[in-house]
Image (cartoon, rainbow, N blue to C red; front, side, top):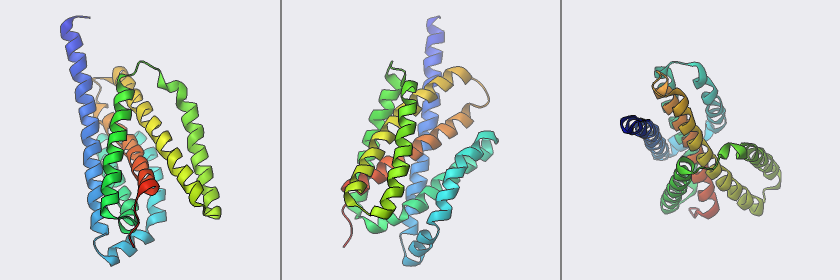
Length: 222
């Protein structure tokens, strides 16, 4: 491969990830804006609390809806996804102090960046850990359901720790997978759609890390 082609390929994948992280950053900004807006008055807070279950269901289904739609529709669904996550995060702003939310956010950003950096540059094939991550997700769901009955603070700490570890692994795994997808589909008309879906996957992991860190070390309002 000539030097010009190598440079073009490097610039291409750089632009591709810039696009992904741009969508991710704007999604986080939208999510935060919605959460702070909804937490600005008690009527909005009550509304956000009332919508938690239907919004959670919608958030679970949106990624499946994005698999077979146009780029414009995928983009619209992504903004909807980020906004709905903002609704889900509204109770956190009510329960935890502003300082705790800020500390958890910046800590989550640091963990996310380290994991994504590792996933991008490592030579290790992370796909071999996909089954471990999947089992971990099933374990988190199982422990969460169990703790609905037990209401144990010790189990809650263990659960939050599990979420941080598993979500960090998923960030690294998804980053490497997005890099692999680029080399398979680079230059196609689906580049932007892949970037949007990639941002959606990473946004979900970021939120999971953020909420777990907040539950683990956040200070509740009195």
